Amino acid sequence: MSSKSVAALVGSITLAFYSGMAFSSKYNFQEPQSVIARDIYDQHIMLLWICLAIFIAVFGVMFYSILKHRKSLGYKAANFHHSTAVEIIWTTIPVLILIAMAWPATKTVIAMKDTSEPDITIKATGYQWLWGYDYLQGEGEGISFYSKLSTPPAQMRNKEPKGENYLLEVDNNLVVPVGKKIRIITTANDVIHAWWVPAFGVKQDAIPGFIRDAWFTAEKPGIYRGNCAELCGKDHGYMPIVVEVMEQDKYAEWVAEKKKATAGVVTTAAVEN
Image (cartoon, rainbow, N blue to C red; front, side):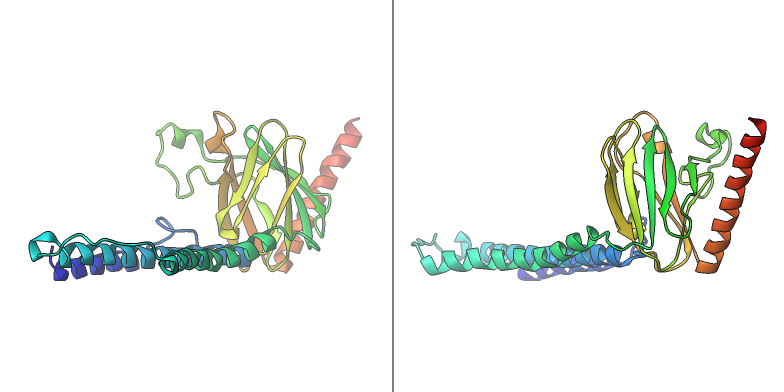
């Protein structure tokens, strides 16, 4: 392989990487919608660049050495001797690279664990195979409901065309306001589940008998989808998570409607008893 061929190979790899950067979220992370998710995404891209640079440097030197110092050109095997300076250099460089990678990652992990002073606290309880939500603190305190898959069975049996959000739609969305710090407390009623919404950079195990927590602040209104991310039984793939982010005024209206509906149910039950 000539030097030109090596250059062409490196160029093709670089072009493929650039093309991959432009792929949609089908081939990449979902578009980040929180500070933590953006930090995760940026660090992911940074590590890919570092790995690409190391790949080009290592294989570039290797192919250059193979081509320019081969036996057919009259070169003979070198007789290397111990060099303390070289060993220090090839130990120091990887250590510095690891520090450069670990420093921002550690800062992000610490930030992910800072669930202090939330505006709203919601308990997410995993069941086989749905989610239960209880608003424990904030404007919606007292609201409780279950959220389960709403994809029609006919679609799952291939008797109807599959919808746009096939297996990623629920009957009751988790609703939160935009720009507020939302603390999610996770636990489970039966086996281990995991509450995962990629766009917010949140993934927290839900373990029976234990309380775990995570947080996010949604940056813009919209509907964001996730899944249970821990194998929890035969219907593991049928317990999606849908978070609907609303403007504050619309969220206040939703809270009022939910509380009114809850009060109506309680009143009806009291009359019947």
